[in-house]
Amino acid sequence: MRRAGLIKPLLRINNNKSRVWRENYATQINTEYAECTLDPKEYVDFKKQLRQINLLPKDGHTCLQVECRLCERNRQPAAAHTRGVAEQGLLAYVNKRTGAFICPNCDVKTSLSNALAAYQIPTPAGYLRLPQTQPVYESRFSYLTNVTPEACDALGIKGLKESQLNAIGAQYEPEQNLLHFKLRNAAQLVVGEKVLHLSDRHEETFQGTSMSGLLIHGVGNKSKAVLVSNLLDFIVLATQNIETHCIVCLPYELKMLPQECLPGLERFKELVFWLHYDSSHNWDAARAFAQKIEEKRCLLIRATETEPAPHLALRRRLNLRHILAKATPVRHKAITTFGAMRNDILSELQNIEKVNGVKWKRFPVLNKLLKGHRRGELTILTGPTGSGKTTFMSEYSLDLAMQGVSTLWGSFEIRNTRLAATLLRQYVGYPLDNKLQEFDHWATEFERMPLYFMTFHGQQPLKPVLEAIEHASYVHDVMHVIIDNLQFMMGVSSFRGDKFWEQDAIIAAFRSFATKHNVHVTLVMHPRKERQEDDLTTSSVFGTAKATQEADNVLIIQDKRLTSVRGKKYLQIAKNRYSGDLGIMPLEFDKEALSYSSQMQGAKRRREKTTTEA
Ligand SMILES: Nc1ncnc2c1ncn2[C@@H]1O[C@H](COP(=O)(O)OP(=O)(O)OP(=O)(O)O)[C@@H](O)[C@H]1O
Ligand code: FES
Image (cartoon, rainbow, N blue to C red):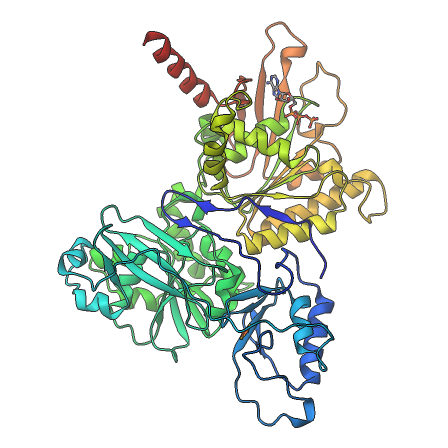
């Protein structure tokens, strides 16, 4: 199995709405499942091995479905000639993108190479089958009862009865005043729980080992399902008795859809996204998730005034079945018409703030000019050597990650530990080297952000980097990738021709990645050697004009302090394809916090003023 650059998740992902506890247990198999990309050759060998033992897999939407052989629970694999008609054994799932081998029956996840040995006849000497394990998920809530009328009324859904809530699997926890639902995996085993706090409507998700749980209401033979992003929408639709569709609540709202959940969706031929977009960073979530679960079976109800999320539609007395019937394909055909795009356009116009993207909290000038940070765009940041490109990009990305933008850093120039230390200092707002007693507190807070780091360092060929990014965008739902800096991929890739040609090819690869995977890619690039007194311009970007032609945004750090007495340092927005506004943002540097943010500096001055006045 080819290892891409390993991506080290900074452990837990959490934000104030939904707590995800990722206990990364090692799998029971002899090695922990490594984050790696699928080796096509291994996949072919595995299918060949299955044919040899006459075990015919089912080629599903996202997974190969095959009888599991990992543990002793299953019959020993019969030799090819003795197998009669295969009665269906317990199913395991091989993810066709990552090669992850997932068995929901024993809640196991491992790599294809690990699993292959279990299908070999004779079993390789020394290979031990897994002991039989029956995963038991221990609920965090010890006292759960039937839903009470008061709890039902607290939901504010007109006409809803507590008996309906009990019928869809809801339970009530009186101490914390919350509704509780079990999450089950593809083998219908309880592997987690999702709760809705009735006091403030915030949700929390708790999962055990492999994060494979979904909340599904509806009988097993339905081949269609509606996917909703929160429990309120789930309750509204699940209590409507919609005959044609199951109702599925995504476990982590629009933040992410773990690959371990995909086996639970394999049985559906049609999936309708009917989502509630509660913030700008998840406006494109349906498109991103559809790419993961196979676009051609995905339909979308585009959020408009007349087709809002289910709980809003119910409140506005709109006809839910009528809205459901109007779902259209997520992706338009190759040739389309205005009519087919009409709802898309209306939805974007009515949600323009979300379409503008995620606003920076620390850089209001950037919001004014760039309007926000959007998925699918390519940004180039350049500036003189040592001018603060990495420092600025660190704070720029931190601001977004604090708002839920899942971010992957490719730091080829400085070590991940140094970059993470910079990010932490910008997060805290002051250095911790003489306040080490505070480190654990801040580090635990910091870990909860969706920040990932590629473990590549120094010169890297382009291919493994793109593989690692592709893997991360699939497995971790990454929305923003930063490459610092591009020059580290020059001279080692298998390009022939001059360095400008090589640079153009690398930029073209990132451009198509950003568009195809709807991920924002930021490339930090050195400028051509310029005379210090000259302003850098878009043509200063290293290489040919292609770099700045392909980019949606070009940001340049201009440092005039070195060439004139009253010189300032500022960030120039030299290209802005989305809204066209160009301009500059002054960069005052707070060395303590390693911050360029005027907001942070203002807050710090206010803090100091109050302490001196006290
Ligand atoms: N405006 C500033 N004033 C003073 N020091 C700064 C400023 N901006 C960054 N620094 C400091 O300068 C050093 C270099 O910053 P950084 O690595 O971000 O620059 P860079 O442009 O990425 O460098 P390179 O061109 O080598 O990639 C860091 O120690 C950083 O803390
Ligand atoms: S049935 Fe698959 S590991 Fe036990």
